[in-house]
Amino acid sequence: MTQSTTPATSAPAQATSSSSESSQTRSLQEILDGLPVKLADIEAAAELLKGVIVTTPLEHSRALSRQIGAEVEFKCENLQRAGSFKVRGAYVRMARLSEEEKKRGVVAASAGNHAQGVAQAASRLGIKARIYMPLGVALPKLSATRDHGAEVVLHGNNVDESLAEAQRFADATGAVFVHPFDHEDIIAGQGTIGLELLEQYPEVDTVLMGVGGGGLLAGVAVAIKSKAAQLGRDIRVIGVQAENAAAYPPSLAADALVPLEKVSTIADGIAVGRPGQLPFQIIRELVDDVVTVSEDALARALVFLLERSKLVVEPAGAVGVAAVQEGLLAEMGLNPKNVAVVLSGGNVDPLLMLKVIQHGLQAAGRFLTVHIMLEDRPGELATISRIISENDANVTRVDHTRVGGSLAMGDVAITIDMETKGREHSELVLQALRAEGFQPQVRQ
Image 1 (cartoon, rainbow, N blue to C red):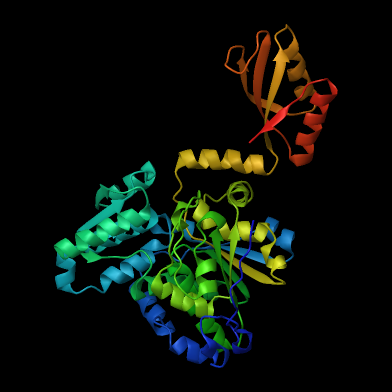
Image 2: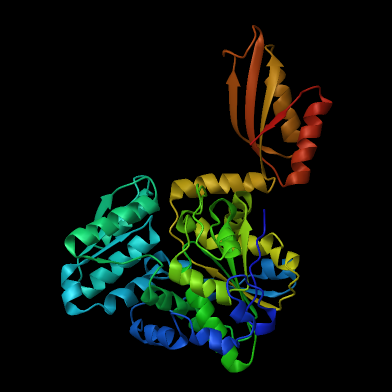
């Protein structure tokens, strides 16, 4: 787990960004007035979205509240239509097209959530939509996009390659390219979450959410900071990235868009290698911090949400929870009283969910895999099974191998998967096996 801090600009005296010396002398209102998206744009977007989206609920997390000593609420955009916040920006962008533009149709690219948002909005507005998706896109997201009536074309190994092909198609045909995050209307649409959140949770003082290209974080930051300024309050806005797909920390440090050479994370919804130009302009001025979390922390957060909150959330939607669980607020020197975490989406591939759950249990010390070399003689496996049973662990799989390139004559290799109650319990099981003369090697 790592943490990257960007400057706080919620009060002018705190602004230390290398991006703009003037932000240290301008008032917050002057900063807001100079941004490409303003509160009025978001309020107008909210009017457009009436009857189109649902006002997603807040869910209180008693477990997380007890852990950090503050009230924690989840803004459940995983329960939004099409399963994520993306339909907000997509609909606002497309509803504002001219009649001539609507006739030309729209084209977009996405690994899932933006695709579904565009497809649903296009269906509602009667616009033809063509969506480019990477070749390895999860089948449920592919099927859901097609079910909304969009034409889906599989192209490229990642979203960046799909985006490039979508732009080429737009240039060649005149179709309107609907970017997933780098457009004023998209940002304004996503920002409506901030308006809802303040109405539902007026006492909130700290808001966390995932960030990929930055449209969600930028829009919510404008809404939250603008409303807070009107009320004479300071509300912190914090972005969270997966550490293997964190383009914002280096970009903010350089005050320029710094593309990543490689992006690799289970959080495919925020696996973006380059920040959006417009979101970057807003985030560097308004967002207090951008922090990062590990893949293990992400997996643990998904398991926590399933077990303790009964919420199905995709990895990209769980990064804010991971940041809170990992104690990043305290590491940043913050002592919040009322925290909101945006759960941005719930479109997760069941096969990925199975892998993430197992990984999350393993990361939490609740799933243990051991590899043991034995002499090939009767009773050895029975002895191991007895030890595990006596120590109250539950075997879920056994792989017993007598033949292999690395095995000598008379040797046996055994790999055992088992459920345990946590790290301390796992260590007790390992100690019991060692006490009987076995040499278990823990496998990840």
